[in-house]
Length: 216
Image (cartoon, rainbow, N blue to C red; front, side, top):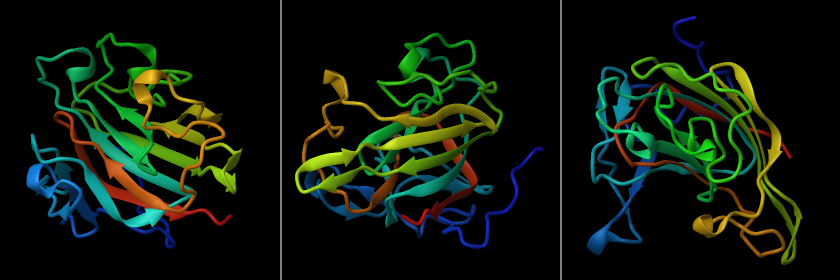
């Protein structure tokens, strides 16, 4: 199948190949802390990272969701490791699912495409070569709190190009280099947050990004 099917009837379509009206960007410099107009390129049915434009942040907020994403990395990048086609999907602004050109590109295991960044590598490696469109179908269970106590951690299930690479994987207390992630037993907001597309290097997202809200 060259392209995945159309979104289901109850999906919230965040990008359908035309504009970034469902997205905003995080300001930098004098605009730090503000929402600003997104600077990513939209052309030929896809959106593409523009250097220095910052992360894209969905205007809609989500907790438990099913998220479908199509992405692409350029085939002619001279870079290597984490500099080749690096991007990511940030859930609740804290948990990252890595996007990377991982074909013939050695890097650390929990930093490759399909990894829960800094914690869990994918169970298998179904990554296609750069220049081919790839898909994520992600099921995210947001953490639950009782006052200041985490009573249920976050879980992620991920299908990468239709292949299961995480099965209800618990997101653990992060290593020191990822201190922005919530720690077990710490007080973090359990309210819905935006979905974020990172701006790190050349990567594109195309045709459809859509989440379906999962009932509690």
